[in-house]
Amino acid sequence: MQNNLFNFSWGEVVFWSVNFFFFFYGLILMSIYFTGIILANRAIKRTKQRSIFLNVKDIVGATDIPSITLVAPAYNEGLTIVENVKSLLSIQYPYYDFILVNDGSKDDSLQKLIDEFELEQGDATFITQPIPTASVNYIYKSRNKKYTHLTVIDKNNGGRADALNAGINFANSELVICTDADCIIEQDALLKMVRPYLEEDNKEIIACGAGIGIANDSVVKNGVLKELRLPENLVPMVQVVEYIRAFLLGRMAWGEINGLMLVSGAFGMYPLKRVIEVGGFDAKMVGEDLELCIRLRTHMEDLKIPYKVVYLPETLCWTEAPPTYQVLINQRDRWSRGLWETMSIHKKLFLNRKYGLMGIIYFPYWLIFEFGAPLVEFLGIIAIIVFAVMGLINWPNAILIYAFIYLLGCLFSTAAVLMYIKSFDHYTKPRQVIELLLASYLEPVLYHPVLVYGQMKGYYKKLFNIKSGWGVMTRKGFKISED
Image 1 (cartoon, rainbow, N blue to C red):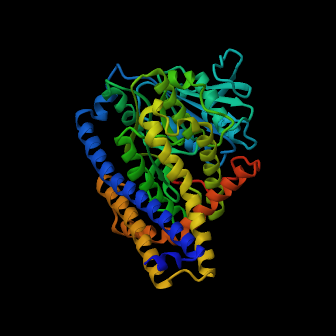
Image 2: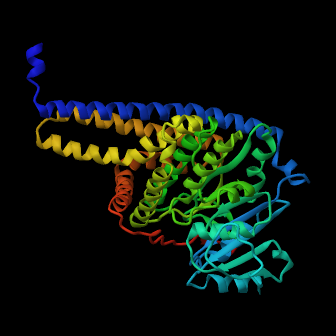
Image 3: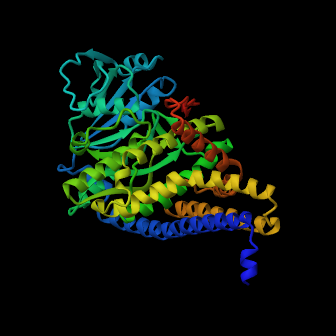
């Protein structure tokens, strides 16, 4: 036995060491996913039980509910701007204002808004700016009484985070919702989003998010989603599965243990006071939504005030997903750069007991498994190539292992899709269910490698300090119904 031990070559030692690393990394990740299914299922049941006692119809007639301001930045959104604003104006809530921030658009976005909503130009010099932003040119209000709660801010370009900050500066409410001008929001979304603030007594809710759905090729009429269809092309179709899995099994599970570190930038609600206290969104970052949520949590930990970050399982906001591989790569490139920046800025949280479970568990998870996963996958590909050249791979066994990993990944997606279909009535037709399940099994082969490429592209840019902005996000626009 001793002779056999010393007969191992250095290549074999490295081979087995690398294999054990990938095995334990994957084992821990799979355990987290299985735990996520259990937590998400429990959270969905609990949320549905609570909704029975505080129905949205009760909230509509209440007089003591918090006021809300919606803030949506827009940059060159002329293709869909009118329909999107109509959607945001049709939301049901007794006390809310809508602020659209035109962030220096170079297309006809502003003129379309002026014409459609009968906007009048006003003076912007009276605005106080607790959060510094690029200069504001004009404030527009509508002459039409139907749009009295609409305000359009025209400012010089400063990026999405800067535009959100400009809207936050102008807001005069207890809560603020940050969204995107190209989103279609369910009409009762605010009524549902405010419910956790009314239910919670012991902890302050510093952020609340909800499910984001994909509405490519769906039918929109007067800014309202009239018919939800599955995307016709494979790239956005697979993203439907990805979003369901990420929001339902990921964020729902972390929300159950108050471990949420991210509220989606497409639709997130915050207390206005707390956002201003921490200085708003960081305009220098491309991952401003993740960074703000972590900064808010850190702020509350420093103040030693009990708090919660809440996630609602129901999809309340619909957006257009990248329709092609190239646009998808641009998006994930940007997201990975934002993740890199956020992990770097808040590295003091790592294993820092001062910040409780956020420092000991939540932040390390994000660093090791959210930030680290693309790196591990990339290194895995390199390892396979090197070991294959060295002749160290037993291909029949390797194929069996890869098949097992593939099927296990598909199992998580299948579980997420079936949980979603069971809990919500968005995809109820048998054909839609079959297409979603088929997409779940195509995702690892036709979609995930492109995803990893986009993430590694973003890491490469950060590693070598290659300057890059948001990237080109080409949109087709929603299908507009004239009926």
